[in-house]
Amino acid sequence: MSVFLVTGANRGIGLEYCHQLKSRGETVIAVCRENSDELERLDVRVEKVSDLSQQDSISDLISRLKGLEVNTAILNAGINHVMDINHLDAASIRQQFDVNALGPLLLARALMSCMSRGSKLVFMSSRMGSIQDNTSGGEYGYRMSKAALNSAVKSLSIDLKDQGISVGILHPGMVRTRMNLMSNGIPPEEAVGNLLNRIDQLSLETTGTFLHADGTVLPW
Ligand SMILES: NC(=O)c1ccc[n+]([C@@H]2O[C@H](COP(=O)([O-])OP(=O)(O)OC[C@H]3O[C@@H](n4cnc5c(N)ncnc54)[C@H](OP(=O)(O)O)[C@@H]3O)[C@@H](O)[C@H]2O)c1
View 1 (cartoon, rainbow, N blue to C red):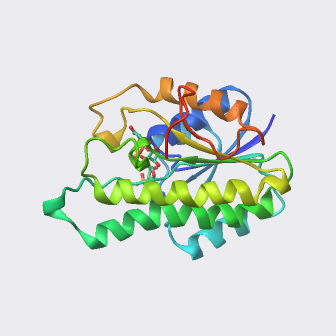
View 2 (view 1 turned 135 degrees about the horizontal axis):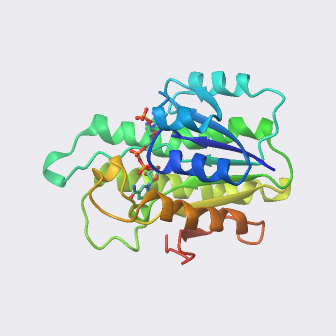
């Protein structure tokens, strides 16, 4: 039995991670801004935060985890504000950068105090962060923020290798959650089943690889 910490745990992909991990018998620490009925029913440890893009929220969370060993942290919380070139919103782009890229990097650094050799840090990225794979344009803030996340966590994978910590950079596929207005994609159950296979297989040999949940290596 391992200890898994999951952010954005109250709904969508994060909630489904908590569900499947609990079913496997793992210890789950569910981090969220607001609890949900579904998360409450899972009866896992819930740690509330006000905003994971802010250092004070991150420090507050870490102070509550003192003494705990986290084997795998899944940094999943994220936002997507749809935006085309005629409706650029600088404040929204900055917010997506803070929540999707800078926040996870700051949280990862803070979580190092709860990790040791063999631990795993997993980031929920997106294929939309791939520059080479971009054939449809648009989505400025989201694409920029996920490309920045990829860049940061690639560095992290190199920096943490000597400490024996593996870094996963995963695209879940197109998943039917509130982020997609519940309209497109595969159900979270299927996506998280695939993602957990990738996380279970993550090692120092594969650290820092940008992977689709189906196992395909994605281009940067
Ligand atoms: N769905 C897809 O097709 C898809 C595709 C590629 C990548 N992804 C990535 O997968 C991850 C999960 O996506 P999802 O589809 O499950 O999205 P979702 O249903 O919209 O859930 C997003 C989660 O992030 C939390 N969150 C947002 N901003 C936060 C903040 N500042 N501080 C703390 N928590 C915050 C939300 O909490 P609240 O409920 O409090 O707002 C919610 O729990 C995201 O990183 C997303 O970019 C999703």
